[in-house]
Amino acid sequence: MSLTFFTPGPAQLYPTFEKHLQTFVSNQLGSISHRSQQYRDLHKFTVDQLRTLLNVPDTHAILFLGSASEAWERILFSCVELESFHLVNGSFSKKFYDYSNALNKYAHKFEKPMGSGFSAAEIEVPEYAELICVTHNETSSGVQMPVSEIHKLKQKNPGKFIAVDIVSSAPYPDLDYTLIDTAFFSVQKAFGLPAGLGVWIVSEKCLAKAKSIKNQYSIGAHNDLPTLWKNAQNNETPATPNVMGIYLLGKIAEEFNQIGVQTMRKQTEQKAASIYKFIEKTAGFSSFVKEKPYRSQTVIVADTEQPSADIIKNIKEKGMVIGSGYGEFKASQLRIANFPATSAEEVDKLLYELGKL
Image (cartoon, rainbow, N blue to C red; front, side):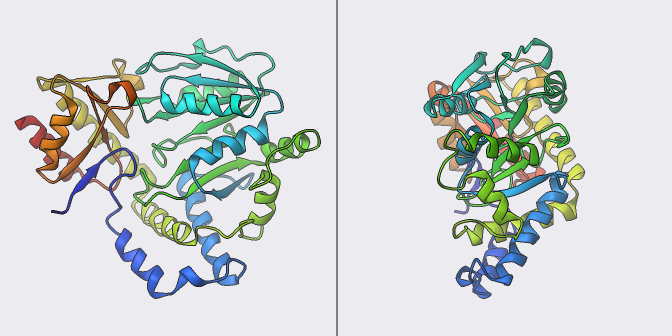
């Protein structure tokens, strides 16, 4: 049986993935030199498509890493000499905070319980914190921080860097990169690709900070920002890159651009509205995130009266896979991914089968 994955990552592969993969193999692109013009053209194509899709200005580079988790380390090395500040309301925002401590930075945090959101008005950034770390979409809990609040937070703190985790929401959030210093995501969620590639969007201001810190402290020996940036100017990477991942990402981003990112955002919101309406009106389900402005549009989390494992098992028998809750909520929650790879018709089928349980 062919399954449809509503898991929050790795997630359903985008419908045209197999076609693009076959082209990659047929053209023997896995064997080309990463210092060849053929590779540089491939690299530039992907960067250009992402720049268009996410409206990234020329002041920011688009760099390729092994994962979004690597971006945590690169950002902390590059933008923090001594102190960072983290908004923590779930497992992944906490891991960003934990990375800072592991790198011997002084990490501050403003923490709220799982399922709670942040507004700019309630946040006081410590005086000496150099970097504000924000998670737009907390994958573990289904909370989104509205983009308008992220922008306000930066406007309240213009002298500090702001880093935004858009791992499980890009390309949905419409970030203003004249305000956002750095953001990052990985491809195994909304871009509908296999895992193994991280994308780091980073500004010239971050580069200058990294060069300054490098005069006093280590900013890492592998993939440090000045080296990544220098190579990117020539459409290359310092080490041999994930050519297949970069090629496939460019092709999927091109298709997203053909659809139009605004159209995709509306489709995401329409599908999310259907899922939340079902959760609120169906016995045995309720929304984990109580405040509507903070409900994720891309990873919907539902509390369940039945054990989530039973629901997951029954739905898999119908040809669909949904995610369990995260951590301590594994047995009592469902996480339903709402990414572009799953259509409105597939969402309707999922809700129909959930309603029969």
